[in-house]
Image 1 (cartoon, rainbow, N blue to C red):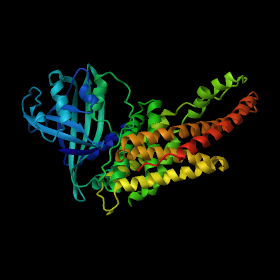
Image 2 (tube, one colour):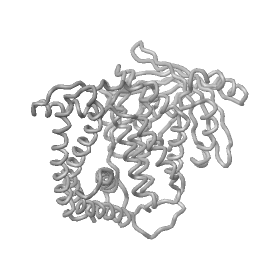
Image 3 (tube, rainbow, N blue to C red):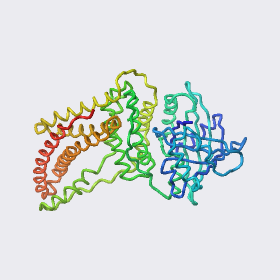
Image 4 (cartoon, rainbow, N blue to C red):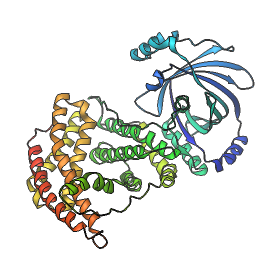
Length: 489
């Protein structure tokens, strides 16, 4: 009922080599023609639901199969409900889904509500070369798909490699994938054929931007299992955006959300790392480097959009800022197609999927809010000594405050909603004033480099120095005010 599969894109220069590798195996060739259904408003697609009828022709027999795929908490794991509907093409029939006890009531209600409006929105025409491998104690099905998605006379070429775990462990699946990923320069693609098809059918050229989603933890969770859910939530935020960047079809919003997701993941691993013995310390290093390589034009944008209007209002002479460097799209695409990035992702997926071996009597609620209290106390101490801290220490305070906010968001479901809301509201003024103070420090560093060529900058530097002092005092006041807030329990 559940499928675990990982899909990869194949660079054009490696496709012939891959085909030859399949020719050396006992390969089953299938011709797959599928029709994907949705309403004219794409209601199912909006809920990440895929409904299709597919003609499977493996040269021995033809069989129509109807499949409903539903999202789960783990982005790379989907609920699948499949039924054979005969050798002849038939009308769409939802009655088995509507009576299936394993399908959630809200999904059934959605299908019932829109069943009369469902029609074919796009089709696929795929040749699949398929081999079954026995590896370690697992069975892994590898399929090479080559063909097209067709919608309204538009055609999108497909060339993908899928690894599906038929039986065994995710650890075996990933161990099987890694050498092939390296040999063929494969890169992980989280878009399903359905997602790409609906995108084509809606004539939407841009990959959707993925925002962070709420996380629900179970108070009965072991801390290690809770950490796996947190990491999974961060990957669900990260991977659709990195897929967009790797595909070459992305914009600044994908980059921004990838940065936010990486920051959240780094924060989670730093705060809750002792909840598991299976945290690889190199993950933090790799994520830090990824964050750095993503880069940002934010510093110049902040000066141009926020500080320049204030300087103009204060009567500052005009000066010329350096032109922002264009985002190197090809470099970013290469970054997220790289073996190192994809190996990191597979390592994190393996961590999420592996069976927990640790035995602890500590409830996740108690463990989580112990971490929150520790961070809260750090900030209380910094608040009392804030004016005596150097710039780097103040920067760490700002990062700790941000880490505290992320930590609260991760474990919010374990506490009273109104108390969480109140606590996050109390954090906000201090986070904003520390952020503005940091922006002024950054602006000073940028503008000091312009003094020789733009002497008019001296006025701006004087104004910034005064604003720094003002926001330094305000930051301390906001921190002291936050320090009085009762810590969450």
